[in-house]
Amino acid sequence: MSQSILVVAVTAAQVMLALAMALALARMIRGPRAQDRVLGLDTLYVNSMLMLLVFGMRTGSALYFEAALIIAMLGFVATVALAKFLMRGEVIE
Amino acid sequence: MSHAADLPPGVAVVVAFFVVLGAGLTLVGSFGFYRLRSFYDRIHAPTLGTSWGTAAIVMASMILFSALQSRLVVHEILIGIFVTVTTPVTLMLLGRAALYRDRAERNPDVPAMDPPKGSLVASREDDGEPAAAVAQPDVSGP
Image (cartoon, rainbow over the protein chains, first blue to last red):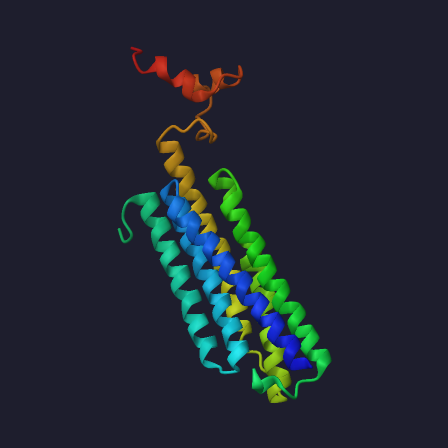
């Protein structure tokens, strides 16, 4: 009973997150400007982190949590570096 | 998902509600990000996913693992805290960068930099004319 509820909910969540990732990827490809692409990459990072958390709930292992934490950190650093590059033309001055 | 076979149905319903809520909000945010027209509109949409999308999925994960292991499992809250703290920093930087780029290109859709008091641009802008249209004849001035 509870297993079937969880399977349905987690599968629906995975489908929705995959669709969200596809939309972020479409905006990243379409642009039209560089800041849209950077924001699309940031959204893609957050969505994939949530997707990994849901994968961890599905498999019941703690390994996916660590991967999600690392993806969150890398997404923050990447977006800040890219925003700095857009503003100044250099990352480290 | 055979590890969740002996979960109480009430806990399963709560976990299912939160995980679907988080994923749905993330989807709505990403749809808005794809759909809205200007960048300054679009920058608001994905925050649905970074605020309640992340919080709901993290809460579902914490409830599920706490119920499965019969102890308090709260390490997922690290992700929630981290995303909550870093998202405003990221979006402020990106928004300032986009504004800087638009102003450097003299894009008429964004407000210009605050002009110094008593300057020509400020006095003409008060008449209701856009700044970009006024700035052109001043180039060939004395």
